[in-house]
Amino acid sequence: MKSPITLVVQKIGLQGKSFLENFYGIGKNLLFMAIFLFSLLINAQLLENSKKIEPTLEVKKAFEKDFPKITPIWRKEFDGNGNNQLSYEANFNLNDTNMTAVYSANGLFNVLQVEIKTADIPVRVSNYMAKNYPKNNIKKAAKLMTNSNKTTYEIAITINGKWVNAIFNKEGDFLEMFEKE
Image 1: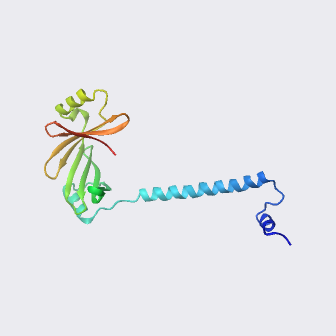
Image 2: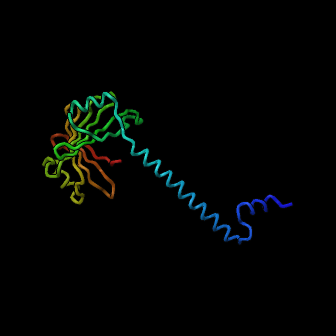
Image 3: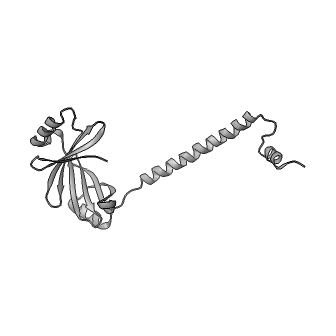
């Protein structure tokens, strides 16, 4: 009578091979299995990330009223204390200018962010940045207009390899600076 181990060894074809031959054969199969499972995981993640975001009907209607005939790419964001306030961001291009319109989940317009060229930054803002951050080139600039008609400018630079946004009011006065997430 053969032992259970002998039966298993014969069944999986390990009989007559050295330990290294057996280990290499099993290891190679395990490696291929791991690569296969990893590729399935990556594909599932890519599929999840590429799902099209659909805003609420109220948000769609508000955007279509504000920007007729524009087809945006939507993103969902969670803001507020504890990231519990859902908002939708519509990214789009209008007259060769990148824009983002932000709406609350119930369709209330919150803010419009319009990318601006460095030459279009207000003089006071440019002077402040040149004086206080002479070695930090401006990477991006935007003008933000809120639903309460408040206008601010957001200037993005890098400091020690980290993206930082400097915020200025409509008159060009410095308000705050924060590290971008």
